[in-house]
Amino acid sequence: MTAERAAKRRPDAQGKKHPPVHVGAALAELVASLGIDGTLRRYAVVAGWAEVVGDQIAKVTTPQRMENGVLFVSVKTAPWRAELTMKRLEIMRKLNAAAGAQVVRDIRFR
Image 1 (cartoon, one colour):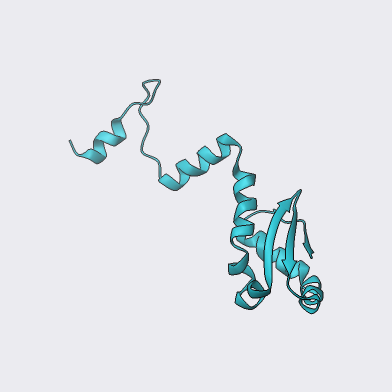
Image 2 (spheres, one colour):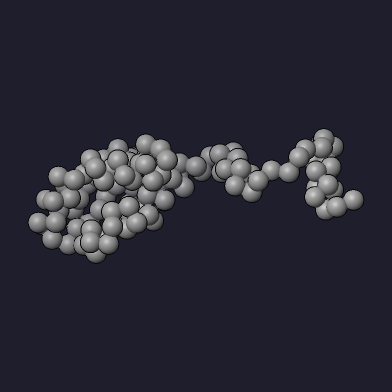
């Protein structure tokens, strides 16, 4: 019997036999069962800031934290803060698309 066939026949804790599950699906199920999916999405927004906004904006900004759906971002200069405030809705749309959910409800540039 091959290892793959043995894995398909391996019983769980209740003695029931289940087919193998993809690692990604198993992790998603674990994250949901632990109730940390929202926390991971918020972390992904902060961690993925530079990738979403691009190098030019990333050089003059630093995402600080997420609080109740509000992303706080420090900006090096007032002109950049004004420019980013005008682009706030576009940036929120891109961040939420990258997160795969409505994670960011507002952005505060400081």
